[in-house]
Length: 280
Image (cartoon, rainbow, N blue to C red; front, side, top):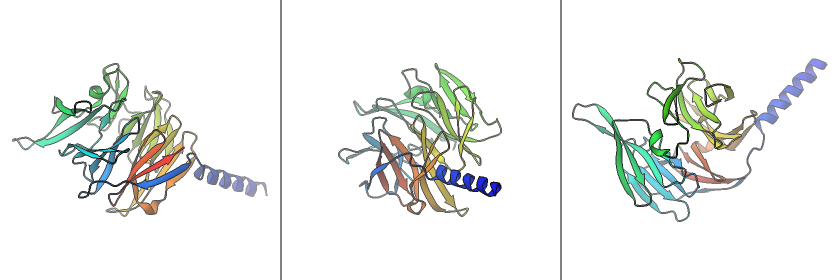
């Protein structure tokens, strides 16, 4: 009957949406990383020539050269691997160093590391916002403030955005390569995009945590599952802004926290392995 035909067409359409080929996986290899701590990816240089690695609780920061496999310890500080910022030319890394004051209060220094002379400097004491410090060229940038809302830095001014309402908790905010859209995750609700004014909110997916832009129309993230205490499965997924989905790495691999640059996607596994996938 007509109703059955419509239902069948709808099921086929949903199936096509969830099995689209948005990216072609050319190769995937495990990277040889320093022994000792289990590591995860904390950042990918915009030019795709190095990764930043940290441990499973975001302590320490290691630069991993993709051409040579050489590693360099940038910081051993607590919290250094959380929400690192890398400048567009890849020469400047800005990160936090967390420490305990004599009054037993946790403080954060913001440290700027210059790759050209391998020197580091504390550029702000007891701050959390990295944005203005790394984007010296005046480009817009976003971060999550202490109230768990999106903070856009535009022309040197801080603008707080709450596209889905002020009662929501936001995470993993970033700006599209063309500078037109903000990608973010709302706790318990899913992954969205909006414009730089917090308008034109577009729902992307429920299960796309730690989302990152691959290009202006494609987003990568993780679809992780747990039993309330432990991670039980995690896949790397891709979505386009039209809602099509592709599973890039299946959930049995326990793949987490993908980062993209220049036709490459780096990700970690729950077991502390690092993989580099080349895509086109």
